[in-house]
Amino acid sequence: MPVSDYTYSSRASYAYVLCTVSSAVDAISSTPLPIFDSDHDDVVFTNNVSGDITYTAAAGTFTFAKAGIYHIVLTMVSSQESSDQLQTTTFELNSDGIIYTAAPFIDFAMDPTEVTHQRIISVAAGDILNIDTSTPGNTMGIVKGTSVVITEITSGVYASSTVTTAGSNNTTDQFNPFDTDGDGPAFASAAKIASGVTFTETDASMKVPSAGKYLIMVNNIYAAGGTTNSVNAIRLYRSAGSYDVSTADNILFSNTAKIHSTIDPVEHTICVIEDLNADDYLAVTYDVVAGRVHAEVGATFTVIKLQEGQPISGTGRGHGGYGSTYISVMSEQDSITGTSKINPFVTENLTGSKTFDTRTSSGITFAAATGTFTVDEPGLYFIMHNPILSVAGDGTPTTEILVNGAVVSSSGGVFIKNNLEDPVNLTNTAFVELQRNDVVTVATVMTAANITHKAGSHITIFRYYGFFEFSDQSGTSDNLIADDLTINTFSQNGLSRQYERNIDQVPFKFGIRGPGTLRGRGTNPSVVKIGDKKA
Image (tube, rainbow, N blue to C red; front, side, top):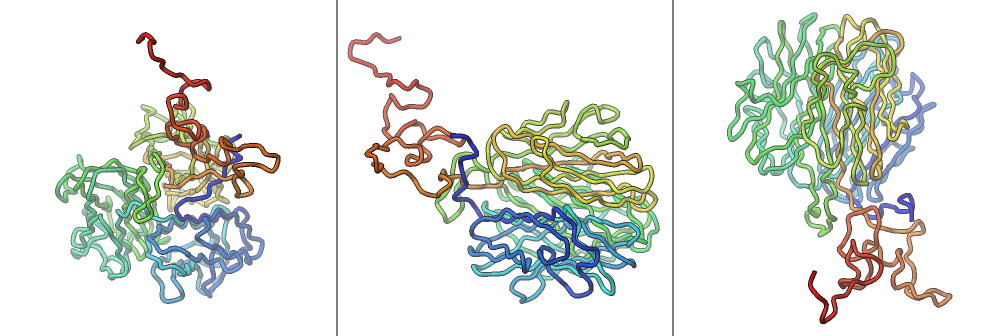
């Protein structure tokens, strides 16, 4: 039976909605409206949602049947019409109050604009999530490429802190934007959520409790604070056994982005998977060459331990190595400059030493010669591509995520003005079902002006911890004895996981356990008889 004949009948909760056709430019105004409401003029959404989350397209809401801890990642591509305005995006549970808010600035002459939002939330069964946006005294549109990924955190180890009061830092020295020591913002208690990972407010450090693979995501929403033009270096630090961001040896990851007071606040995303040891500390810093920078409301620092094959706590369910497939890769040099379709993870598309830094990898093969990422196991995969782009002139590049050469997520284009926000960080996100040996690639398309991918551009892919059980398309298994008296003892639909298929296997091929049915043997039983000579 081909792989396509298998369906996923049991898995942890998730929801993915993607805008494939942009809305009208005046879809939303000063009244907050749901981003993923299918009633917006012209808009088209696709979705892939597990059975225990209900996406109501006509209302743009998400209803949870199962209580749990969930990670929300919103990639917002939007237009702004007529005048420059803030665009306020909020997450709200049950209309009881806003649990996340951010308001980046959108210059109407420089749209579309991409902004990433994220938050870890705790929900009860029956809770309804609203994801809304608005712009005061003006209108805005939802642009192709806007998406939301909602995933249940199954490892039980996580922490997230969100800025609820903007910082007021006035120093040019490197500082931690998430702390409460006077340099950074103040926090409200509702802005923190943690289990296992220890978040310390005074130094804004995250200490992990055990060794493993950790997803680290930071959406940096920041402002220049009166500086007209400067470069902000954003660094992710790791130190062992104690908090320390004083030495370069502790830098895990470093990106740079332009800040400019006329387009404050802006957003920059870091998303990596790191192999950490027990009691490792993580922290984020900002560092400007001149002027000043501070964190704005909505900036969020999140650390989540990935599920690596264990059962979900409290469910007793688990299956082999599912969830143990991941990769994070960063380019170490700038790409070549051009106007064509560029895959920034092809060796020959880089300058200088032409090298990539594979942060961590398991079950996904990165081929730098072709810029491909080949998955070894089937499953539901989260993909986030974070290019840092520089343009020779104003332009609107589009970004693509492809599977086997077919586009699965494409932005409608994001405007870059080279003398204001260059280089700029963009994000493209997908949550897709992949089969064994499927190939993932990414590309940036630019035709109006030359474009360069800067060092630090990165991609992260991991298999979401899903549970994969066989079921036929009708949802029923074969009867033990069919109507025509066929005995279905070894029917594939009846035996489910015991049969050979494209998933992790039990040791035996058929329903009867014995030496003749061990996997790897031929179809005829191999029996050792008395008197046989030992090989």
